[in-house]
Length: 148
Image (tube, one colour):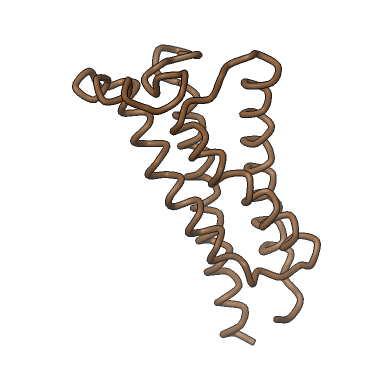
């Protein structure tokens, strides 16, 4: 793989920054605020934290060989975080949220900014931003390779 264009590097750094902010936010809520993560929160962390490493290494090496891994992890993260948000906000699904293993039910809402922004909502937004940036990055690099 050749040198990345400035546009590709910027997209890569934006994806890494979003993953880092999401990781730092989840650690802030658990370690500083003392919110104990539920089972679905742990799954989202399992999907988010490697993205910091994947995009960080890609940015340092200036290559995107691992971009497919990032797309897959963020895509699965979108599904998990959206499901978790539904468990918190949709009354019919809230009953399922109490069945999570561990000490904290998955329908527990620690934060509720503006009446709709919860921690799973923040994760959903972060995964979506990373996914979209990754798709754009993939297209930019593919066009650069095809054009020469």
